[in-house]
Length: 545
Image (cartoon, rainbow, N blue to C red):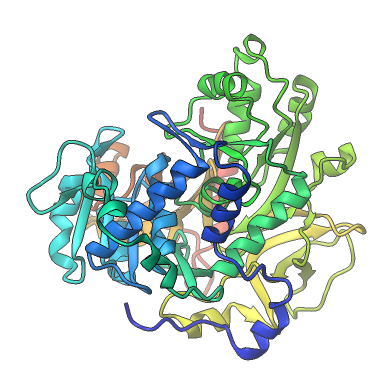
């Protein structure tokens, strides 16, 4: 891995060094082991580990990774579901000073090919299959593109001849064969990059967001204060670990407060309710559809939910009517928040907020984070006036991978230009009102509009293609494709369009779920496409069912 360029100038470090924890996740792990060695740390469908057992496995896997040639500064990519192996691997990667690159399980050839190529991973870990998809075959087809990849390890029984079983790391007692104390000699600087996670590519190719130990740890600690977390709290996480919500707060947060985490690899609301009763879950964070599925579940009254006290609805603006309906049906608090891959969670409502704040806002800035709403000239607007949302603070990322110039363009006088629009009230609470960035949020998953449009343009019979959001009662938004065909060609259908995207290796969740064929797109006199008119056309149609 080549030397990473970040925004961490001496002045920037000096500004936040007293706020940053100056620790790594391994420091928090050791603290938890010292205080609660026998407490259960992580639980998934297959296994559970106490903190002492977790720490032992972290050392074992770290030593095994070293045997594979992984060194400080190398990148290890994980395209895994929400399994305990992910946590162990991330901590082991961190233990040896390497960098974790989480990849969302729904990514396919096109996304994976680009992202692995950008980070130049030395080792990749995948499942053999998950949700009926064969990852081994996909990586076999892609591997020739990556001369820098030394090893691909597989969780499962179907391992190709060019790959290795994860047993090499997990079932070999490396701690008995090698000196664990050697791991303690590795120097960790809290300003070292520890995570590279990709955006959804809203304006072309995805960007690799770099976070340090400090930026991740400070962001995680914000939750402890706002949610009043103690070691008695039990987190549930079904959001994928390769989203910043799942990674920062599902993988890492419980270790910060020495609590227990319960993981679900495939969202199932009834199982979630069962787990609340069984494991005494106290809170969770997830996209709006998770909340909707929970409060509308016919099984709500079948389980003891008395331990559960807070549901953080994140990932997309939460419909206010849903919050109000839910408040009448459940006893737990429903909190709304806003954040991004680049900055983690920035705003969140409080447990003791008024009903108005809880139902009509996306929260107030977390400690040491700042937000403001400005006009097009970057002048701050008065309260209750819509404008562009900016933020800054110690949890901000330290740059886009190999794109320091692009990173600097995203800032104005030290403020990160989020691309979102918001209204701020007199108390500093914001409400997200829209997005400048051209994305569609399908159930908390960003659909990269320009990326899909560009692929549709690759179809030999397509003259023009545009994507806009179409309202959906459950997922909030789905993608509607407006397409103009070339003369004398066979018009696309939903089936042929989706078959083309599948052929191109595009994740199914990114496929448009509605298609409109037009003779021409609405344009300005200069030829610029008027997307607002396409949105107006969509708004006149009935929501998707």
